[in-house]
View (cartoon, each protein chain N blue to C red):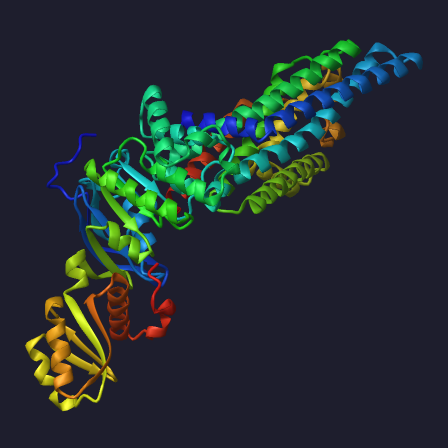
Length: 323
Length: 280
């Protein structure tokens, strides 16, 4: 199959829906992923992330809506030749050797024998399993199996790599390796669809993100756009709440207990803000300046979505886990 | 399909299933040859005629074949029942089916690979047993390939049923259902023949129905027919002897054989449809 034009989105879904009995797993998902970008797909448990991945790969069928992968309808066999996939539940034939697993997947995507062998050898090197190439997969640790799965996903230089929680079984060194591998794939023009609950990881490697909840996108765009502008937060006592308007010269002020927040707030003007608070009789205990972390933004967006949907925010696991 | 069939055979070899089956087959053939040899010697010592010895040996051979069909039924059921279900449960299928691999190719590849293993085991063991018995007793059944072929077809029927169940049921459940279905079909066939002999048409119909629903017992009659000496068929071929599950007056008809092949196609078609509808 010829590579699709760079103008054609690698993934495009429009109002994609999936219902399991009475449960709506996807409630009209619309998103676009372009060639050469790392796309982070985030959401709390049960948000519809894995369902989306299965629909994209043709492992499940949508109830309604449309979608395309590499310009072909969802589930198209020819398009799947150019799609690599690391499932969240990564399991490979335990009775095969590591190189045999890679060669099997190479055969399934139509690579020639020599190409399969060369590709398998270089990928085993890339994922750090070169010295275990002839070991049976059944003897691998979880982390090693996940590394192998990453190699499988990259077999045949796919145009789209779908990684579902690719570092869940890896140690910190392995996680750094995976980030490097993702960047390498992007640099050769592949799109990477990254489904991860490790928000710091997503923040480090993704160009764009989509946050899903209740089966639909609640925020999406470039990471900078989703995170929004920088803000300042001052823990202060002795401040008269009726004089809050005086801080509007910096941004929009809010006072929640002893926490004064200004958003957006130019980090260069923080000393000026401190002077102002002192001049107004406030006693400063702590000053924080910077951009909202993805984790904070994620919790904020999902909590807001749930309060609108009538779901208690306590349903969020510890108000911090995103998968 | 060929790729999947190849790795399925490889799996049987790597997991030592193949070698266990070969070892068991060699052991079974050795014991059969030894037992038959002893039986023939004892019969000769007691002055039995050649015809009597042929009858005894053919009955022994049929009885061993019957035991073997049960072993084969278990083998087919417990090879076929986990073939799809285990891949779906463990997650191996997710990585495979995300590739440009049709579900029909995946299922037929599993079927083909397991058929090669099962038929190799059934055919090889049965052929060796017949040749060994022939060597020690001077009794060679009228047909060697036909009973071996019917045994192999019987195994493929059960394997196909196990694969169909494997698309929806857990491995243990699928294997158990398959073995129970085999037992019920055998009992249905025997009861049907007894009913026919005694003139109970409803029981006879039930037996016919069980042979249509699962053609293992009908094919078993083909195994028996092929192993019997011709004079047995001619002399005791009618009446109450028809109710004996270790006697067959006729081989399965061409229509029945055609139905068995069609049955296989229908079951595999149903298995493909069920797997296509299943979300992985």
